[in-house]
Image: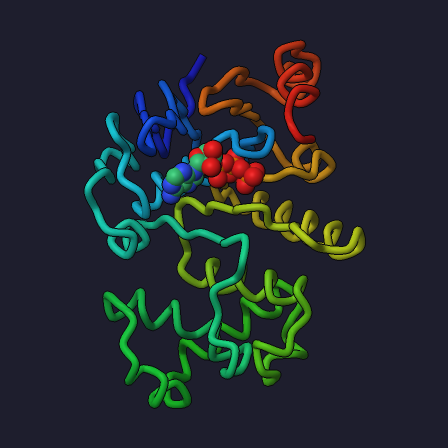
Length: 254
Ligand SMILES: Nc1ncnc2c1ncn2[C@@H]1O[C@H](COP(=O)(O)OP(=O)(O)OP(=O)(O)O)[C@@H](O)[C@H]1O
């Protein structure tokens, strides 16, 4: 049988914070075009793992390899330039700028190599990028709100805007940190539909999520973290029935 192409390989990663072994023996392979969920009780190490992948935290040992390139030691913006985009738990946006301008900025930053403050003055002359940003806003259902101040959007809309800010970078890998946290059931379902649409285009995604409805709606594969270790790894149905997973959740906060 043909081997699926591995886009991201987290190889034998350990992360210690003083005496705390926050990540131990992490070996994770993310396959092209798949949605890979990372779940686990509070404090399991999920955010630490994401931060190691995007270069915000150095691993104590081990390395992360993306498409044959070693990421370990590179800065977050360099990792972003290589094709990894991340939707944060708390969206990082320019609250005073319009929704449209917020979506244009990452595309400009990608084109020019990094973000520069003077980009803000030239936004209106960037007609090509503006058209693309409008297209992305259409995709995420925010086209009618493009002239609103980003700071005045609802929480669910901010997350959708941030998704558009990621999609306009055309990443090879999209990392989503609790994309539906704090959303109503209706907004959660809209976001699930949107993420399914992105998946149909073949984008590879890693998703950290507490909401099992979201996880089981989207994931092709699930890795379960508990106390810094991967205790189960597999297809959703295999993971669902795994007694170790049930024990980790019953013993944890969820
Ligand atoms: N910068 C840090 N310094 C010291 N300890 C940290 C740091 N970041 C995380 N930790 C600890 O590492 C462990 C893993 O935390 P992490 O935030 O990665 O878990 P998580 O699975 O994302 O939890 P949650 O689901 O609650 O967000 C926790 O015990 C946490 O207190």
